[in-house]
Length: 430
Picture (tube, rainbow, N blue to C red):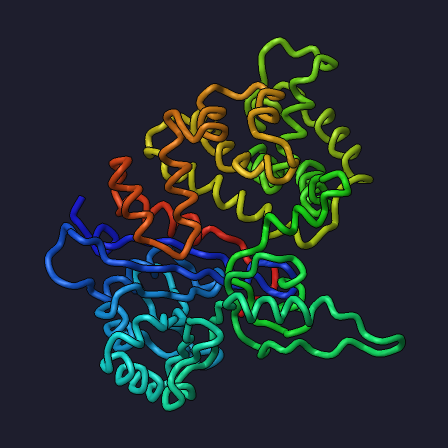
């Protein structure tokens, strides 16, 4: 295959979550490879076309975060401003990608005056720009009007002050006022559930980059973790609507805890099945639709409606699909389903507050899956390591892991974009 721009860069991503605890955008970080297969700088126009090949216009809004000054300057020059309502967007290949929002990292802005000039010219053309940096060190005053929004990373003193304000109780009969953080911006580095709720609900943040998964789960430690009510009902609806086995399987797989409970049930001695059930599809074949419908019905009264868990589950689902896409195209379907469980169950210890080495032996998974999730080893270990690195704002770390595990960056990039392009938008976006 002829080398393209996707073979010359390394990508990573972060999910952006809104006030309804639903996905409202995707940030994609782009860094040139130190020794790309093609000579010369990255072609920004070709990069946009490559993104347009794989990301649909009706997907989550894309925030593009370059990690080199040359790429930032080129993107400032070639990205089209947002099209007016009702007007067609720029067409790349066979799909229409809405103009991405360009994020300007502060470390690139500080590196050279060329970035400042490029920002002014882009703003004059109508380009909407987002500045990203520490909340206590905003961009220079002469440039602030050129940015549509900020992506603010809270330094420790700011986070402590915000947390103190978030936990302050109002006097009797007094309403708690708006928060002290500026509204309408993206906030990053939020590791506390209290701070997450403060930013989104009181400060009216536009979105959070990432999600405080560990603290959200810790805040629920005094109640038994249950599968999502919405996913259980969607699975029942799919069964009652006589949907295909593939649709039912994909719906069930939207909740890792539901899949785990299903495999425990399918392998229980009470059912008397001789062969171990290692996947949802196998369990559906052996149990039958009526048995599965009855089991799902039993989950409904106890299912969780906790909205703060939606991003936690959604991130594990993305991880599972990405691991599946990282496999070679010709691999058999049974192994594809198996490696998907590695991603889905990689956060099971967090959800259930038990070591993975205790949880996974309760279901009859292959040794390959257990080695990857428990020990980060075995044939699936490298794919899990790369997948976890892809979830952070550091594409250089992805580069290093690809080199260590002899994985082609271009194949990893294409797998990532195909997964991001397949995300369903189920709520308002930004």
